[in-house]
Length: 348
Image (tube, rainbow, N blue to C red; front, side, top):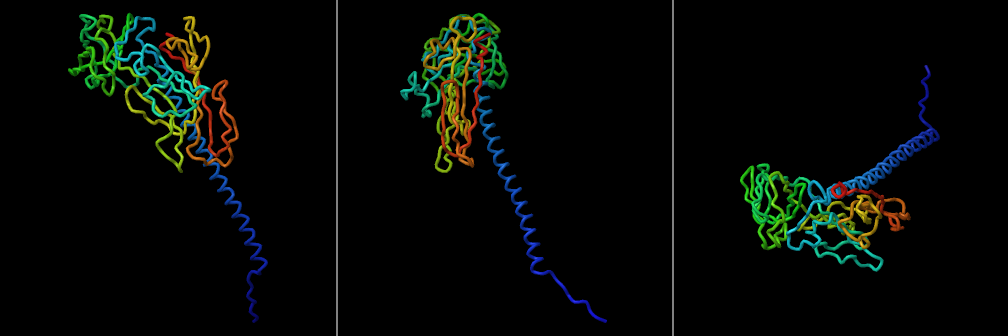
């Protein structure tokens, strides 16, 4: 009986099989690489969008509450704080801005409280009620315009001595610094004497006279000036400090909020005839009366925190009419946000 000869693959057959395998492997690798590139691109775009939305929402939240003077904007208003015309304590105006002009200077002159701003981007200060602060109500009438103020409050609520607060009803509003806060649990006494050294939260009072003998039921709420500006980040990546959105609340230290906010331009809607409608949008150096500002338009340019775009950014970006930046000719990715917000307390 004859035995069948042993046979295997020929060299040609092996080479054909290897070639087919390599083609299939190349296809798989191409799909994996394409998926990785797409994922990275989507992740970068998502981060840009998240940073932009967060920056815009933070500013919108404070601007909507800007210019709080109680239940109406037309009541008599007084401010007893020392330095009541200064940037941080001028609660008569809802907002105040600084413009970087064509000569390379800030108009008006930059306040000393704003540290190391990035040249070329605007700065805005909003006088507002910061969310989460205590809201108190007077439970007895004032015996005189200089008398201590007693309030009802939540048991856990407290205020640091020196805190600027606004007391208001539908007949008047006044801002003063709390010289001494005496906590009695569900009630408290607010002393507002003249003088006193500036504290870490407020400047003290020029006068103890708030101008009106407020009756029971008046609201007492802490108020602050919140300053937004662009400054280099404290974080250095590959030898580069990215531009970031920074915030100052009252007399507090600057806080870095969101990295990658590259530029900000602002226009202010001014009501010059008292009909509570915007007559024109102008830059900070052209505002005639900050108390007449009832709306704000701002544009923000957000860039990636690292130069990881495969393409050179040769585009130009119009933040607001008449203000265009770029091309940057680098590998950062960028996106643009613009929005307009009404200062609700100035139009009601």
